[in-house]
Length: 457
Image (tube, rainbow, N blue to C red; front, side):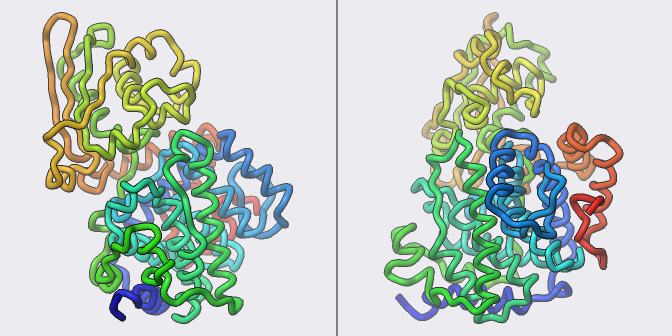
């Protein structure tokens, strides 16, 4: 391997330690503010789930008090515990954002770690936004360097790459020098892991939590003088060799600051609280229902022709829990047909197990046909072609490359605000939810983040 390849962590660390707020374009900062709003909204909703409660209980029994807020708790905790708990909450409902540079859930891991450290050191909001941007860009650069094969092999890239993004974001807040940042990245790469066998279980949220906490921990240890491997991507026992059959495009880590992956490929904001792999099909069906005015009682069969990665992700054809339902094309389609919209209210066992939903799921078929060659998969990574056959012989079809909310088909700002309020109001009440939304939208300024998530602190 040549020196250029071996120095990937050097490229990342030099840029991450040197970039300033002024170096980040306003439209990129706007994207990050949107990501923070969306992440905190779904985390507030997710804080009411069982897995988030389990994470809080573990933290309460094993972590010390501190200055960082834990959603769902009145007690501030250590930065590490807050990162762990809030990341678990952010990913608990699988309603958080996604980026195709690495096929990762970036914000659910990066944002909780950065906020926890920022509250601990009483950083300013603008510095927090800068740190999240830097962490995201470094993580997405590594994702782009690894390519799609990493995810297709079965690695859950959120767990594998998340500590890099979280660590760099926290490291930027700690003002790590380049050598320290390189150690942070080396430690994050050496210690990371995660496979897609966690899908449909609490492990998915908890691995996101672990990634967030680990990134914060590695950054703090690097700040204290700990060293890590200087060639984590190219070492014979390193990232590329062990995880990706040696494949790693070092050039993707050399264009930081010139190419902004928060813009291209961009960040996908979820419209529905299920795996993004089902969203294109759901959009098609929702549009056909509105146009043609048929109901679930009219359905004979729904055929969803999708890329191979969608079939791999949506592995539960007969889900037995809300976790499994989030990774089921059959449930996503049936829920849309039965309720007209797919929201948090449908993620309950009594809904999934109802006779109506069960009957419609039996009429949904998912395949990956010959249309999905390499070019089409690249153009529509989680696209769908849907054919609906009705009992009276009518047939309707549709094709979509990108779902609503994806970077290629973004949601309007008003829809993102509505999503935030629908997630946060049940937990906080209308007044507090609106106040939190206002604080998050005004975060990119000279404002303290100490009481950002809990004004009482």
